[in-house]
Amino acid sequence: MDSASAGPAGNETSPPIRPVFYISDGTGITAETIGHSLLTQFTGFRFVTDRIAFVDDLEKARDAAARIRAAGEKYGVRPIVINSCVDPAQAAILAESGALLLDLFAPFIEPLERELNRPRQARVGQAHGMVDFEVYHRRIEAMNYALAHDDGVAPNYDEADVVLVGVSRAGKTPTCVYLALHYGIKAANYPLTDADLESERLPARLRPYRRKLFGLTIDPERLHQIRAERRPDSGYARLDTCRREVAAAEAMFRNERIPVLSTTHTSIEEISSKVLSTLGLQREMF
Amino acid sequence: MDSASAGPAGNETSPPIRPVFYISDGTGITAETIGHSLLTQFTGFRFVTDRIAFVDDLEKARDAAARIRAAGEKYGVRPIVINSCVDPAQAAILAESGALLLDLFAPFIEPLERELNRPRQARVGQAHGMVDFEVYHRRIEAMNYALAHDDGVAPNYDEADVVLVGVSRAGKTPTCVYLALHYGIKAANYPLTDADLESERLPARLRPYRRKLFGLTIDPERLHQIRAERRPDSGYARLDTCRREVAAAEAMFRNERIPVLSTTHTSIEEISSKVLSTLGLQREMF
Image (cartoon, rainbow over all chains, first blue to last red; front, side):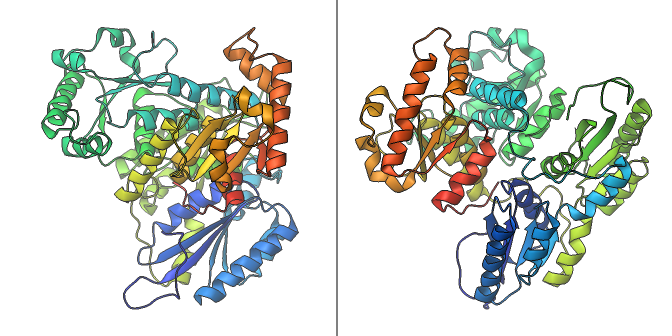
């Protein structure tokens, strides 16, 4: 997918363009998340996507419909609209744009109303708003914890829910931040030092927290690339350094039976989801 | 919603419990995102939620169905399943659990196939996997940028897409990290100092980047609470300090016509979405 502007749809060398709009009365995150999941199932198109957030009255819905109609005229093809506005009157206005309108909530509301035996409350922007202040506050605290425990110099990990362990640049920091932001998990980050890697045993400081540990590893060639971008021509970035460190870290994880995952072909979302299920952490997602 | 374990459903003092399962052949993020959006529209229940990720074969689907059935028996009420597995055979197995099965993709695939005039490719775990390495790499770079430019001491902001400006603890850091993680935006963070706040004019270092600036403000009472948690009894946390700093920052934003948003009742997702639309940044979401 691609959000750049582009010429007319469907010449001989490039895939046909199809404009897609995510329309929401809130942030647009729900619409874009499921819309993206749906579009990944269709190959051979270049989807030119646009997010129109905070469409929370009929006037804004009319403005959005005008933009959708204009995109259809520009590209000469019917736009696709993924709509998560809760107000059916807004959906009706969007449908007048001539686009294919996919209403995210419509197919599920009626079965849920029947199952729960009560009508839904069509409140705007609840999903990603600050609904519960205490919960939100814990999430920000988790985020601050991740940033403050990103360097291995924490006095202890008593408060941590998870301690990610690995060599420098194996992917620990982005994963810690993701776990904090999305699950309110207090995730600390312990980079293995040369001294740690000499012994193939857990560093003494980590031993009391064995059940919170999760190892991250990475392909040495990939690690070499990443390190070379940051510190070209350093001993730190050399391929043989990367090979030695990764081999030692993997031996340690194996000896100590620390669960481990390679980040080479694994996204932050996948790593985070595996960490939660492996360590048995059940948390609501934000 | 609440993921804690709990006793039997529906006594007189607490709302009735309803078990909810998010089932996915990938991370479960899509299922939980839309499931959460749907459930926020139904009040008066305590939804006890569980995520079962990476259900990518029939055997795992049968295990998931057994867990769902067990939850129905434990709580004495029919579970709700939000399913995003692409394989219809897995959905059929999940349905045998007796739960209300809401299949996230089913209602949209047929209209999309008709519109795009080709069948979907039912590939597992595409939405939150590492599909495009270059795109993923830019996202991690953006994350590193946000963490490295979190303190206002950057030599310049030439590379930044956005510079968030505000007093200490107004919400800049979590927003920068969110913008990086989810949109690959290079977001720097400039905390206004006492010296900056004396003049009501933009600090000299920010003037060349006027079009990248976005101000965050906060209710002074709320700021006082947040600062007092971190440094109790400090001059920094005193309510009159907070009032003075916020008033000066808001005057600066007004004088300089910097767009501004209060974070007091606004989530990171909402702030990020507003920053993108205000500064006209169009980026795909991760």
